[in-house]
Image (cartoon, rainbow, N blue to C red; front, side, top):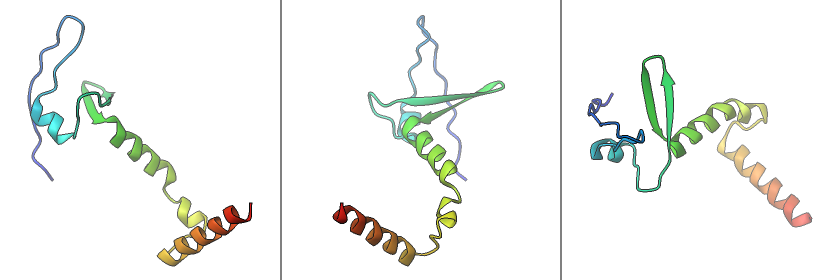
Length: 90
C-alpha cells in the first residue's frame, strides 16, 4: 500500500482550487484533463475521470466473459477469428 499524499488547497472566490503538483502527478493529470469528484459523507474522493470510467466499465463487465464461454486465450482467438470471418462475409 502506498503512502497517502496529504496537502492543502485554498478555495478561491469562484469555488476553484489549484491541485498541488504532487497530487496532479500521482493522478497523472495534465492541463485540460477532467476529474471526477465523489462525495462520501464528510470527504471527497478526486479521481482522474478516464481512470474512473475504466473502473466503472470493468465493474459492469465483470463475469461477462464467463457467461460468453470465454475462459482462455484460445477462446479469445477463436472469437476474434469468428468476428473477422463475419465481417469479411458482409
